[in-house]
Image (cartoon, rainbow, N blue to C red; front, side):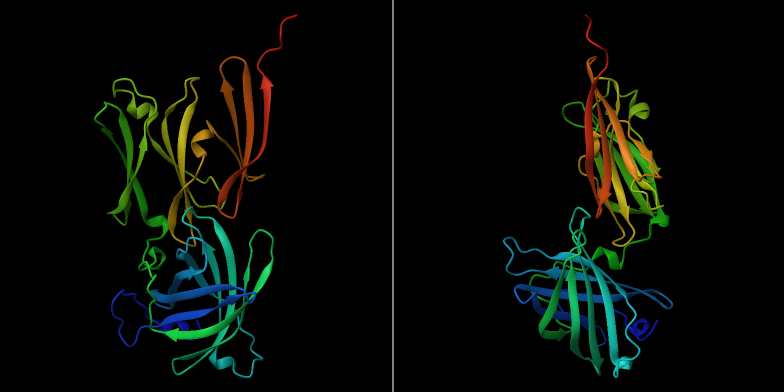
Length: 309
């Protein structure tokens, strides 16, 4: 991998060793929106590395660092300064796992000095591209808003994970189902904790509280489904945690607890459910994934029985 494998990067909030590399670009999107992009590299084996950092919009209503994960892109070999030309692609991820932006940047590097060449930010939904102009370039400097090392740089891969289920009773005598996560045999904090919404005396916990590994976002990688009990109409309820292979994190799927007894259609890449409302109606709902977020795309209501004449 050209030039990159020699970059051994470790983030420190206070001080940085001279050999560590940080890329810090400040500028504007479309000449209007101020941004700060800070990222670095972590070696994860021979001829392999990870790239991650944060995008920050200082003039946003509530500024907050947004995780970005990078990967090398092919630079133009006809560029007269190709030997010093770098091209990186980035994806921008919100805390819920939603991808809200893509970036493609190019810059020159000569003896530790960086010169931004070109770049753009792209909306992953609309495809709209905003040119990036850089007004300041820094190296080996962390901004005041830096939240700490991105987990992506050090997180284990999905195949390293295993899971164990246990239960705890709260002060009200109700149970939580807890899923302890292990990676390469070592516990990874924090554990997954979910409220059990249907228990009798604790003897039925193994029947209603369990975890299964199933690919629910159709990317070929197993995710987690935690069973949390039953509805008042005797339908199983679950919560789900989906794995993102780019950020190397599990994300709780918002609203999945409302999808009782889901059916997964791998060909259509959609999730469907039939929710009983007493003995009168059934609601059929369909969901699809969009940029890492599960969204309802259809809903209809049908009567279970025809009215008597």
